[in-house]
Image (tube, rainbow, N blue to C red; front, side, top):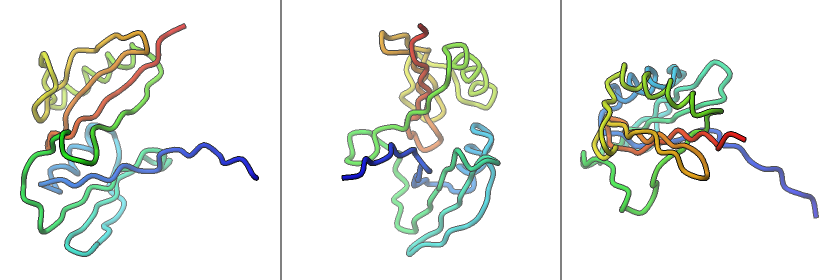
Length: 144
């Protein structure tokens, strides 16, 4: 039997309440840019990517969206994590987020908030929230 190759994440698809505002936010935070609309039954998606198409987001609007903010206890996505090389990279991201309206707080538990960097035995983590309260994380492995 052939050995399977380890897959890599191709894109992250998220349902949002205000598609245009979310497109602007993800473009600003992640330096990705609009590529195309992808219509689907009951709505539309917008594809954003970096120039090498190594980081891609598909942001979706559904006509039946009830407008509620994201909550982890609901079955489905809990959060999305992105890796960076070092804890110093987390500090740069922390500043970048703050410059772009993601405020520092004791906990990232509301839209557009970020937590302090948490240093754990398995690595360091910076938690933050998008405009729809979707939890995103940057993770730096422990330095050896």
